[in-house]
Image (cartoon, rainbow, N blue to C red):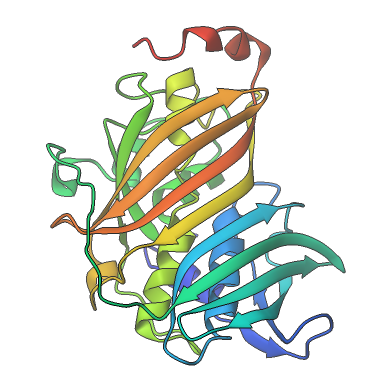
Length: 313
């Protein structure tokens, strides 16, 4: 888990065809190592995206996914993805994907595909942020730091084990809320090395799966930030509940191997849940994708009692 490569991601989305038991097509995939009691949620989103994309062979591209996480997935174990072909139209196609482990459903999503057609365009933009070369990597930030619930395993994972280099604006929330206690942040992300080919996926499909994979690592962080919480907080427990993602523009060839800006915003936090949104941009401002995710947030009593003052630095 200390090699700075993107191989964990490409291993995650490398699927093996299987005989379907419930629906039209089936694939298996293996969740990747991480130092927590349950597998990383982005594994499931990206694997389901890959399974859905492998069921569409007429040139349509994935434009949206809507997912629910029902049970935690075991780490390093096989997940079986069953794909139901709900509709194949001229302009759009729809798939349902269910993930099973140990005979029980743990993840479900609807994925929609579009042929695309000419039309007017619009995109939001983000400006006046420092570039990635001006910011420390996670490994550089954590090199001489310790504290909280961080272990050598979690430190190595945050530093080099997630396939992507991540650089935070205004600063990370690993051991403390670095920077303002505000409801927004941005993260520059880039694979540690060029993405490898993935059997069964085109390079464009692999790059789409890469966005689905990396999006879950930091999407709840603006909620933690505004509440004054950090990942190594004693007693903090988080879990993904549901997830939606829209793919607006296909990354140009090679774009996913370089830096992308992931701008994030806390939308709400209440009753043990937090909602955040995020947008992926290329360095020249092309808006590639939008993410919205709700997660469970179980906080230590002292932290929870101060949540009403979130938003003040």
